[in-house]
Image (cartoon, rainbow, N blue to C red; front, side, top):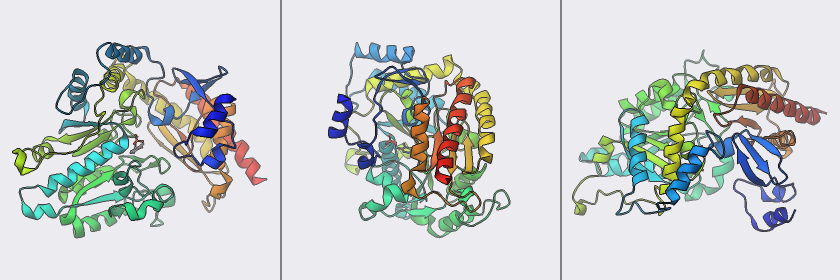
Length: 452
Ligand SMILES: *Cc1c(COP(=O)(O)O)cnc(C)c1O
């Protein structure tokens, strides 16, 4: 009670309408255990969104706990500016080994947003100091409508979500926008697969006309996460890659959300054999323990930054805690667990279980669309299924479903009226079934009360 009062008096929560927040009861987490969160009263909640898409192997994983403790016995922090340290070196080597072919250099930072900022600046600077003067005109970035790449201003500039981004328009650099395939609400009014991916023609035309001024294209591979788990049809990503290659546009893959097994493979780009020029990683990188991010680059890009100091080709960018040793040790331990638990091998069965459990939801009256990619899913709720009319945002339907689920011991966080399921990868088949049953029950409860 006292903690709640202090929270309501002093805390400003991220992405949270605070007027609504202070009117609600506040769930205060005091512990974790595997896939569960524990509150002050000892109640257990299944962590259905992996503590905002970060947790992979469960909370209080012995191996990660021990790695961090062991690192504390050495040193908690030392800088990568002018010095190096063991965990950062070992993790860089490991990331390059695991990453899609061609990515050979690791630039650290602290969050998904900063990983994206670094990628954008690297792409821009790479062309601006290119030996061929004509190519120095490649200065612009192509991004997608409904994209989300983080909340710092560079990342917002390549974002495309009105709710989050509109207000900051005057502060942003202009970027070229293309449509990502949101098949449930196709902007061309077509249906997949009959459409033959007609939305790509727009990108093709854009690049035909503008590529000589375009430095890079940034994309969330396979799924636009924050926009509502919008899944792209098979082959879309591969076609985007081909267009980038054809027009000499650097491909930046933002795998902050979809990396680390979420889509069934370690990295989402693997699903279509795509090889990005720059790869942004964060969220699950430390297994959900500590803030750490990495921007991986190809050798060609890296070489573009070499030269004598007066040539001014250095990448003058970095954050004070870049590559923090505790976080890097957590990341190494999290990667070890992938091998030890054979995490990726256990996923296909869980993905099938999720798919099976989502089946009945597809037929529910107020479920407009159910989208799944690997081990993540989005359930889009609508007021009218026939016309796909959304609920008025003020009704807070998604939020109310999530609050109802909490009463049953399931923590989920919706994106608008899209219910997101992105649990830790360690969930058992029985837990998957239970999560879906509770979600379905709460969707019915809230949407039926709305209909009355
Ligand atoms: C969460 C997210 C980011 C931003 O990461 P932060 O760590 O919150 O800065 C960037 N891109 C994608 C795709 C994300 O899902």
